[in-house]
Length: 88
Image 1 (cartoon, helix red, strand yellow):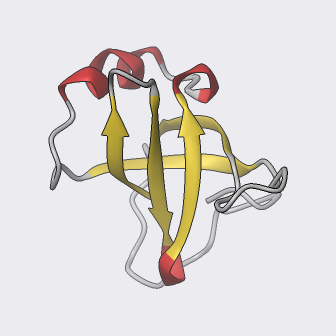
Image 2 (cartoon, rainbow, N blue to C red; image 1 turned 180 degrees about the vertical axis):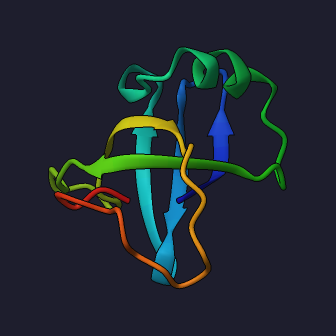
């Protein structure tokens, strides 16, 4: 997915995955130290590619993203190989 918004003052943001699925994430669910350091300087329009696990809805508008980290794999557009256990 791609981070489409991050609010430093609140410590949360949103990730858009394929097919216009949006996910909520909190800084506490970011497991990549390098990503944690980079998030406060996020600017709208920055392309930060990440992978994460689906964490359920909990009755909220957007499902949660867990174990968020930089996407270190290169995928062809439309290719979904390598995604396991509902990882985006």
